[in-house]
Length: 299
Ligand code: ATP
Image (cartoon, rainbow, N blue to C red; front, top):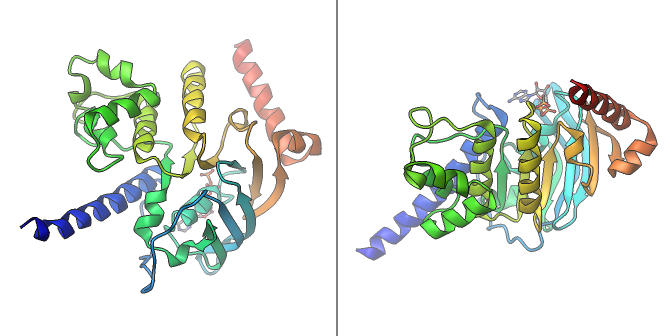
């Protein structure tokens, strides 16, 4: 009988991995329309992740052939490195992340992970290798322990607690009368934006992916919580190849490379210092945000 159930177990795992990916993506991008169905190539093999080098080669993309969105993106993120993408609303930042997750297929060029074209590997292995911390985390109407444990099939209580510690939410959970069994979600305890983000971080820690996509929330948390979350995220990023879709430039000053994306083109690229010195779009955005920060400080 166990022989019979083994494939079912496996199927369950595959289903969960894909479902989690899709739910994370929905949360990340507020997707409402169902994208065209992506199917595995008949000869698809599992992605073999080594160091986690992510490479975009002349990537083009259009949701609708009449309107190109990404117009030839080239970049490479070194293992464990951080790439930040900034730019005006509608420039294609989220689209770029969706393509890495293969939520859509590129219309030109290739995306490679450790030299393997992501269009040729199984979706399950690809999505298993990428963690997402979305802007807004979807919580299930279940316990907070379940909501964290969702990051990895069969996670033990000890692993869940260790992830919660890593995401600095363990003490908060312990302070709840029901602890890890406290119900959250619409019908339970309402968590704050920061707490929900910590749940997403804990899930990601459990998943332990070599590649990470961070979608920074557009609406800022209060500055103390924000700084706290940033510290936690920095620790999660360590040793993982990371793409940050950034809205607040103060969070990406340490990125290895920053891309300024405008209307589907990379118009500037470099480190924070280099881009400030160049005095272009990025420098302008930085000055604007700096003066906004000052206004907040001066009240
Ligand atoms: P923001 O900072 O506002 O999130 P963004 O840079 O992430 O913007 P994208 O979400 O990548 O921008 O969108 C790029 C363009 O693609 C936009 O013009 C958007 O209208 C269009 N677009 C996004 N999703 C779809 C879709 N599912 N179908 C058709 N067009 C889409």
